[in-house]
Image 1 (spheres, rainbow, N blue to C red):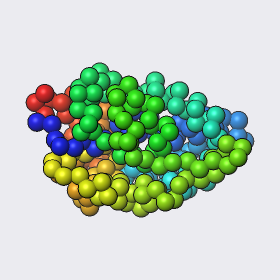
Image 2 (cartoon, rainbow, N blue to C red):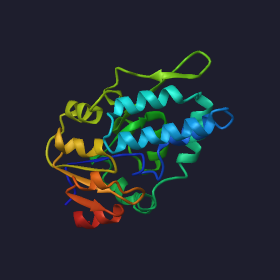
Image 3 (tube, rainbow, N blue to C red):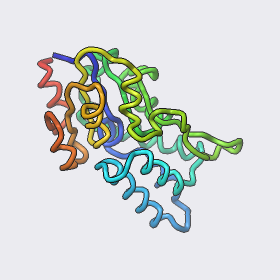
Image 4 (cartoon, helix red, strand yellow):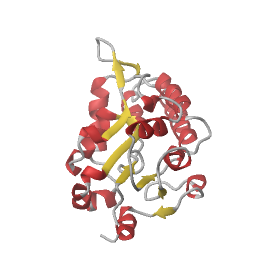
Length: 221
C-alpha cells in the first residue's frame, strides 16, 4: 500500500548524477585549477553523503570552489534532464498517479530540480531544496542561508516544519536521507542503490532498493 507521504531524494536517486558536481564540470571547464577543484568537490560530496562531515560543511566548502553563473546552471539543467535514473523514467506514470503524495527533499538546488521532475507532474510546491544567490552579473555568489536546507540537519528541519501526518517513507542514497527516520518523522527509510551503494547508509535502512521497481512491488501496486 502506498504511504501517506513518500519523500524522495534527487541526486543519485531520481537522477544518476550529483547535480552540483555536474554544474562544477561545466563551470570549471576552462579553469586553470579544474582537475584539482573537481576532485575536491567530488570528495566533499562523498564525505557529506556518508556522514563524515555535516551537509552544511560539505555545501559551503563546495560552493567556495565553484565559479559558476546562471548560464552554467542552464547548461547543467540541460544535462540533468537527460540523466533521469532508468527505473524512475520507466515508472513515470506511477509517479504521476501518486504525485500529490510525493515530496522531493534535496540538498541540491530548486532551479535545477524543478525542470527535471516536471515530466512527472510533481508541482514545484512539493520540491524543497537549496537556492542560489546571484549578483547583478548573474554570477553565483552564495546560497540562501535562511533556507533550512542550507543548515546542518536541513532535511530533518524542513520535514519537521511540514508537519506531515501518517505513514512516511523515505527513499535516498545518502546519510541525510536516513536521518529523516533517525531524527525526524519518517516511518521507514529505504536505501536506493541503482546509482550508488553506500554501505554505511544501507546498514541503517529498513530495506534496500536496487531500483524503483522494487519499491513499487513492495507497495503492491
